[in-house]
Image 1: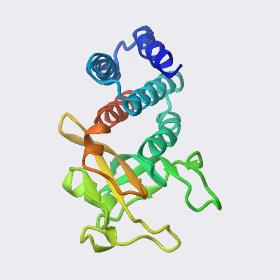
Image 2: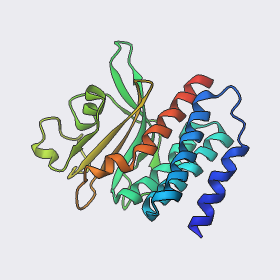
Image 3: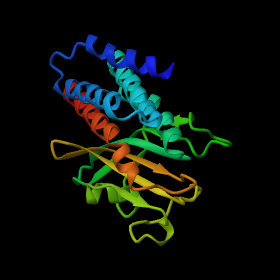
Image 4: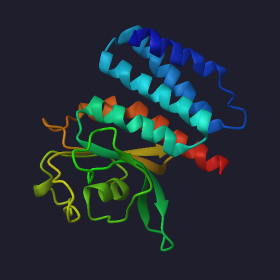
Length: 217
């Protein structure tokens, strides 16, 4: 069932009108390329489910023109695929002092009692650069830490925030510009370096969706 569903989803990408939307066109081309490669050499079901989630997110973005709707739909699937307890998808913005910060378009509502992976908020901002989140912005590289409390890049968490036992942050780069990020936390077994490559299609397509949204607005 999932195999036929993703095949149909990716094939339907051909019906999307991308006139005047070069970034969206690139996102669709990349997603189809990932799917073709998966069909030929890699039958990993987890990777298949990631591509399906990305395809559904692209369709949501096309149908609504809302980046929040696309990322709110995508984040729960990413949390499940990574066995993460919480996380966010965010756009990189700049303050009046030209300091980068993260503007979340989808973030787990960890303050809700007995929250689950589908409890998502939008429009939260992360300004502190002296944190693992901030390290994504300052390094422009993946940030992986399975011992955050001993990690010099970690500045702790705000009052009332859940303890972070493991962290994975991935930058979205488009044409060398840092436009967004994915952050995941508290996979029970920690995060492996292989997760960086596994989620690379998300980083590319997420960045292109952000760029398309900016191009249109």
